[in-house]
Image 1 (cartoon, rainbow over the protein chains, first blue to last red):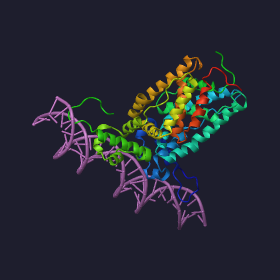
Image 2: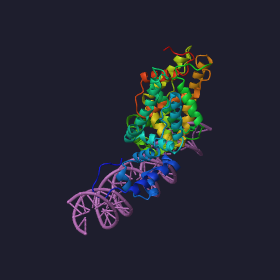
Image 3: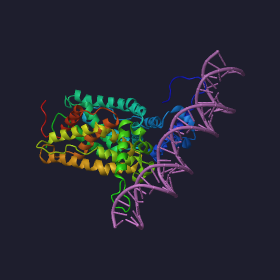
Image 4: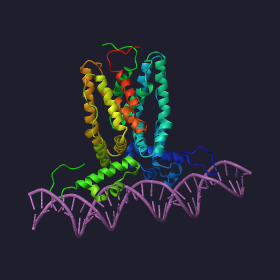
Length: 198
Length: 198
DNA sequence: CTACATACGCTACGATATGTAGCGGATCGA
DNA sequence: TCGATCCGCTACATATCGTAGCGTATGTAG
């Protein structure tokens, strides 16, 4: 990706960088992964193709950086007095975010990751991992507070929650708030100590 | 895909068809999606490139048909006296199947589906849909038998179960039987009427 | 202010893949 | 045998990739 190390000579153009990322975003949103190529980004951004190659070694990593910008991880990691509500809010905000432009970018990145190991690595380490970590803390707090089962497998719960969202995303099915609520409810029943009434 | 309508004249060569599908399978398994192209399949199979185009309009649909063959849907849809065990068995068999070659093919197909609507449609209608339908019947049987909550949202439960498996698959994490057991346990706690002891 | 290091835009090139067209010969059903 | 269709082959046009080299622009260090 972009090197952070200080360099000599002329620095990279911030305007070009912006133009490229904006063009990549627009193409992925408007025309989809199929229309996404370094060539297309070069034309749309007005930046020379060779210049793009200097900053991004592959279209996959360019897509990832565009995705990362769009996904300004403002998920609901707030911890309130109610772990149940926190989980509802977490799933709901994830669903809301991925039902928008960021979701479309995410599908492209995941697809690219299947043929580009570098994309997979960045996606896991720079994005999915930290996000999952914060989610785990939230759920674990519910366990520690005695509201969730002591032996709850937080990791599997997150596999299920996050996986469900991605599943619908990748298969082009709508992700609305009702669906999110239903999902978190279904998952939550597996977390609560008290049994819901008949 | 392959037309079923009876035709006049010389029929399509079964040997060529086999060689193409075998080559596609081998390339996807051994070298991955990145190395998968009509060209590569033509070289490996010994079948002319133009001949391949006559049967498969895109590499995505070729990958899908190869996947479909590999995934000889022998999942555990058996219905025993224990809905819990049935669900465990279902998740376990799905995990076992996708942890093998079929899983690698699946990632390729899902990736292709992100840029090829035809692949997505076929995947959903010819594969995922029917499979999900059968799974739903199994889970619903547990509800009807009074072993699962009456108000269980079967559809969301399947989103979670299937999504979790795909999530790990797409991100290259191991899918073993222990993981599958943990997953179905976590999900099941949300299905049982009786509360597990403390 | 000058010198240097690097980025930029441009052109060009070779490699690979896509998808189509047409030909002669092969192979099946009627 | 006849006709329809398929197969393998060659050829072609287009697209994308990734790299190299050139002259010029634009920063920073001294």
